[in-house]
Image 1 (spheres, helix red, strand yellow):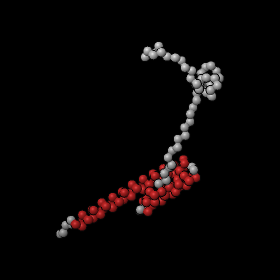
Image 2 (tube, helix red, strand yellow):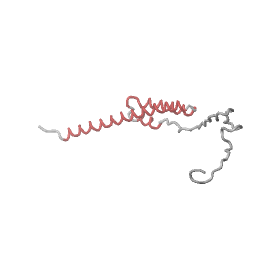
Image 3 (tube, helix red, strand yellow):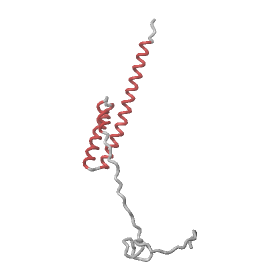
Image 4 (cartoon, rainbow, N blue to C red):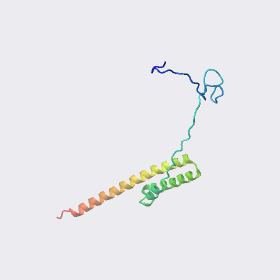
Length: 130
């Protein structure tokens, strides 16, 4: 009897890897061969960030980062069309990094311009007359 109290019976498992005639049978009585299953995982298509690169190229293009990002984006798109996903992922990652730096520099330049204009307006409006 098993712990629950119900009677048990032994049933031979069909297709057990340790049985003779099964593809996983090792041929010796010591035990079955280890079987492995491979799973192909399709990853997402690498991004090339072309639109972001065009935006950075057309808007002030600080330190030519927008141009370099656009070149890497086009290389990533070419690699993707050729079927080289690892190369496309590499070029796309570089384009993304360059776009981040170009966007940050563009934002800092715009912020400094706004602060400079505010200081100039403040100086003109509140100028003391002697």
